[in-house]
Length: 117
Image (cartoon, rainbow, N blue to C red; front, side, top):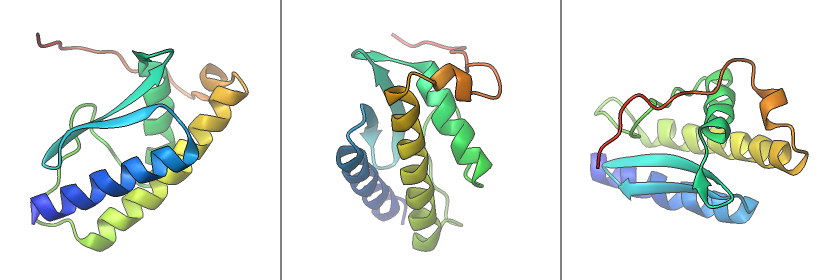
């Protein structure tokens, strides 16, 4: 169940990222992936903060770390999450293009609290 949902989510998410033309990557495995937003080839917490903010505003909560699935998630849930993600990616792309990312944030940029080497 998890693998099927994860594979579908990863494939569709990355397809939408490519269609929009934004430097966001879903890294990891279908069972445990991480959404990473890049600015000038470096991970950007500011960009990820805006993406997450817009997702929450539309009823989707991504954790600060990995994208995980549970048995309660259905394909309908995944498709809704993908549709919301696409909307958020378009908002993020527009904010980047207009140099308004920090202006669009309603709160503070998320902070990294743990690192692993």
